[in-house]
Image 1 (cartoon, each protein chain N blue to C red):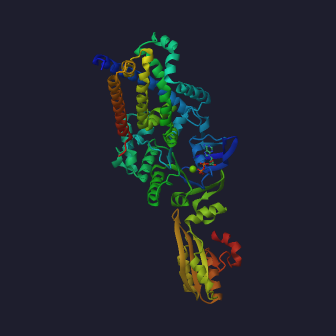
Image 2 (image 1 turned 90 degrees about the vertical axis):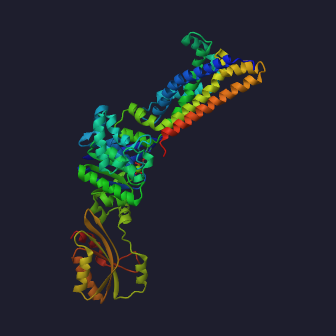
Image 3 (image 1 turned 30 degrees about the horizontal axis):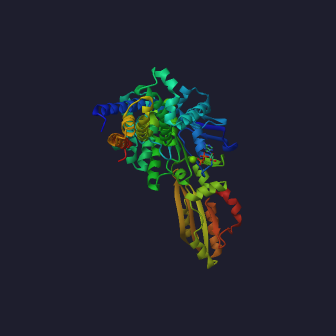
Length: 217
Length: 359
Ligand SMILES: Nc1ncnc2c1ncn2[C@@H]1O[C@H](COP(=O)(O)OP(=O)(O)O)[C@@H](O)[C@H]1O
Ligand SMILES: [Mg+2]
């Protein structure tokens, strides 16, 4: 294996960095959009066909752009936001724009799974729209939201592998530059095993948390 | 307490208008346990939902304690909603929270202090008999227990009105009975006016004092439960009443009539209130030269008033039997002769019977 453990450790760090920061901002964006998609739809607590009519197609557009294209296409915007278009931090901007809309759809699905009767009961109690979201929808959807975030995190790990295209680094980048381009099978194997371990670990944690919050005896 | 004035509700779907409520006029008095019965799709849920503005009427209005809720500001409306509790067919409790947190919800939404919430929750949980389940999650409860939590949650804000939308329709008969008893206690001990929606006449029979029958968005009949059960006017109402007070003649009796004997005649007695059939029957047996046997009886109580019917056989001289029948009529008990045909009654004075019931 040509790759030193130092490079590998650094790559692990870069992947963790991109995934965690990307997930953090992506989740904020995704939750906001997802909640908007739910509460502004027809018949819901803040029905608004204008807001829904704008947010819904925008999410669709971002969802349909392949990540590798998004990565390149938004370079000017990335530069504006973080001062540079190259490097690990710069890679986080397209990662957020990629994963945010994805999370919004997952959040939307999770919230829509909540029985309509719950919202009904909340309205009968005189809950404000904010209280309906905060005290009824999110707590009821919580186990499902955990699984949504788990799925999104795994999707994000996959996306970070492409971040190498803008000098983002990470495990995927090592696999391609050292392993694939220099025919180093060992490096590919090691990075792939590391990624598999990551994914397994995250799925396991997600499932455990989900079960913990579902309160099924 | 609740007054519907020309209340109308239209739903628009695919450019079509569905009139769920059609100029409903109805008054529910303070202290009533008022039942609204109708088949599925009659508009019952829409009606009850206009009371706490889960649905806003298209036309007309609903007054709650004299106030038109549509005229209030959002803040005032939230305050008014605290005076109207609601329970649901499928309970609509939060699975993610314990019994305590579910019941506490209306108070915590209103920002009530923790200690106050705690004592209040314990109080209502004791009232509904669930103090031992305080820290249990909802899916560990039976259907009846879930509805008790629903009732506790509705009572926590000290409402004046309790709305029940098919509150027992998901429960077995035994559990239904216990929930209805609890609602009766809610009405008596807290003086809460109850509006109950159902498609089961048994529920009306069990606890209501007044009832309205709904069909296609309209109220087709309304009155005291005793009046509706004893003298239903529309076919819909008659069908509902029959579902509880079975007054059709059993087939076995028609079979018996096949072997007709002029000295063995069968009659159906219908009675309401104090003039209970049984004493009349034994009086007749003593006064006249006829033998009487009771073939079939169905007696229930409505608002503590006995109510029901008896099918009796009179054996004796036909002329003597006629005299006995006249005597029973004079006691203001409705009596009709059952004949083999089954669809008709022989008695020519049948038309007058309606008037006779009330003397
Ligand atoms: N939100 C709604 N949108 C469209 N139509 C509705 C809606 N709610 C009820 N309806 C219609 O209104 C009528 C009355 O419904 P509902 O009040 O639920 O009746 P019930 O409770 O007596 O079964 C039905 O025809 C139903 O399809
Ligand atoms: Mg209904």
